[in-house]
Length: 193
Image (cartoon, rainbow, N blue to C red):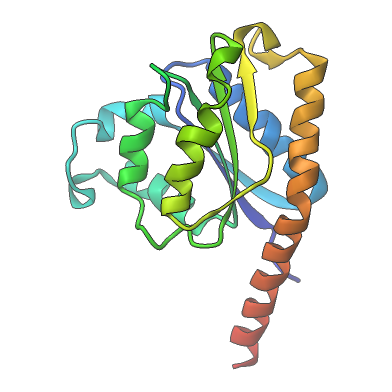
């Protein structure tokens, strides 16, 4: 029997509760409904005091190193960040600066963002997609952008957004399935050896 997929979400939200974390968890739950997954949420706002001032990965405490390894070893990533001055937060970028540049090659990544208004919706394609292209990750076809009005009590309430989130995950499933089969094939080769 093979293990479940490692599904890791990274929320760039700086506070708790966080709309970015709520959106990340919603998307992770949709993926977990389709495939057996081990879910892990990395909340950068909670980790910030431990890595915000670090210049080198070797200077990071073990708690941050564990979260970096979880991201690097994930089978699927869901990343969400609040929009801050037209882009992802500096803390979000700083965390990913510590990720090994080859660790995300061909990894499926579902991109998401939250912001105060619709005018920042293209941030997913203009900021997040290029960042993960650098890592040679497989950014999934549809990103999910949510505004403050899409939430009530840190839960998605807007039906159009809920449908877009479901469509984004549905469109991602073929790539996730390929990833799953590739991982199982590799595990089978290791066992056979």
